[in-house]
Image: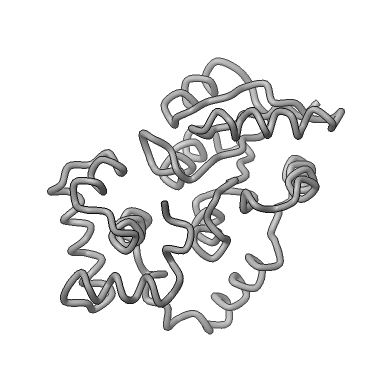
Length: 213
């Protein structure tokens, strides 16, 4: 039996995943967490074969949570299950230690296949993500300046472009406005922009905010 921990702050998503996996006799959701802190506590208390991890968590960004868990438990198998398309966070998730990245709009059989593949020790990579990885490998994506950003800088860019104010971003990222301003400044410097408007135009034109809410 594959014991699975679901980390997602939406109760309906957790319930839906539980119902979906009930039909698979070889896997079961044996733990649910609504935040990174709660997930960390559960990981210390019991064993899980695999974690389904959302990017958007109330206390900490999913990529940061992913790095933390992989640092503490290198053998933990993690699949990122996110509302964001693969070209937003897919490569970043794999680099941070995930063994798979799945868009929440994917078919249910895709998730089940991915779980079995990852538990067997293999990475699960969709066709879209495979194409992106190939483009990165051969250098075709070097012109995409946002790829040089850290996860926090990238998150700041996306939230700015989705219309969030400094105070909004501060609350979402659980950081002080001063720290967010530092990330904003680093982001602008790395990308060669002189103001927010240029950064926002770039993010929108490169479809980085299609799925922002």
